[in-house]
Image 1 (cartoon, rainbow, N blue to C red):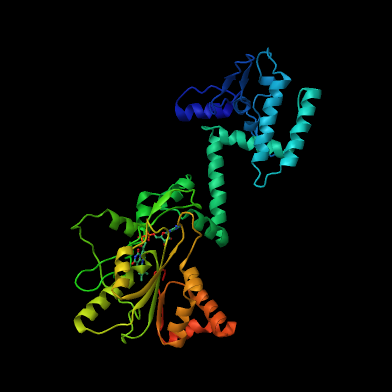
Image 2 (image 1 turned 135 degrees about the vertical axis):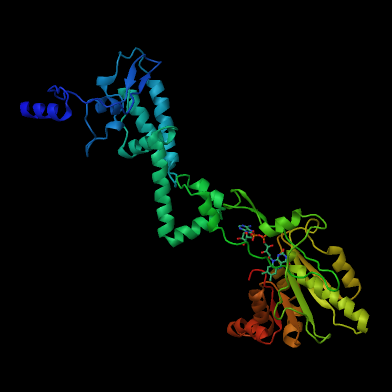
Length: 423
Ligand SMILES: Cc1cc2nc3c(=O)[nH]c(=O)nc-3n(C[C@H](O)[C@H](O)[C@H](O)COP(=O)(O)OP(=O)(O)OC[C@H]3O[C@@H](n4cnc5c(N)ncnc54)[C@H](O)[C@@H]3O)c2cc1C
């Protein structure tokens, strides 16, 4: 040591004093003192105290988790809580613990409350089970709003959840279908994920065009659009709006609409005016049929030809609220463009729910048979394949297999035209 001191003094041209480290005091973390206003005792967290004493955590003990051991409590408690206070708190805690179960177990819950009540009555206190203790610790962490541990806990939870979603496709699909989240909802659900705005913008897909059936004939282009609006999470989640239909619903007269024409393969009326036709549509699914009947009216006027009247089956919720083209179709029936209009209301007050499939089965099975089986008529529909098979099997004596193959045969002959909204 003597030679080292001498050498250091020469090199630095400074008088060097021999000295020794006798203590190391950490300035971080900062001590937290709490005063219990009920009994006057003060508490101090051990993380600070032990850090001062330079005793780090080991594999068995987390120093931060030991709050106020007896040695650090200053002042003797003056007020001890009565057993009735303890009982109220204990029962409240036990209730919280049992309510955290996904599948409630009221029998076990009540039995545990009874046991705890007895223990407190006999001894003035009670012992937590290991699971209750773990639950209590979790609750305490979650409920401490500015606790760094809580933030870390949330991050860990996020991480665990994201890892599960990224590695299990089934779990991801279930989550996605239930939440149908927007970008901002994903970021809200996982607050620990910090994504730069530039990155999000670079990941946004281009807005895709939406297709709408032409709902008129002749000189003007009409559209019949359902405004998409729904709540996610089985109706309990946030309200979502369809991008394009909502935009259509807000633009004013004279506003420009960028669009293009997309031709649909075989979705048009048969060339022969005598071919019987059945049109089946629900909601805005009636859109293309309106262009059919407008064209028929025009052709009849222009050529004087007689056309075989068409059958329309229309489904909606309520005759007063969303029966599209109600008056127009009534007039078409009077004019002989439509032979009949059958409706199915699914939310009509005081009436059983009816869907187009029910109308076909209950009111129009003979008509279906006549148009498709006895004649070479055409059917334009949303998904009614199963109902069609049922009618054919029950009315013609076809086997299930034959009836099952029938719609495909009709499609092959270009007589079954499936509505392609969902395509
Ligand atoms: C050939 C063809 C013709 C069409 N013709 C018409 C037409 O004449 N009239 C018409 O109104 N539409 C028609 N459509 C549908 C139309 O193209 C759009 O898909 C529709 O308007 C929705 O677009 P959007 O931008 O408003 O909604 P988007 O922003 O695209 O949102 C629609 C999405 O919202 C989700 N969604 C909707 N409802 C719910 C719900 N209840 N629960 C959970 N998620 C839901 C679904 O994932 C759906 O894909 C047609 C589609 C095709 C393919």
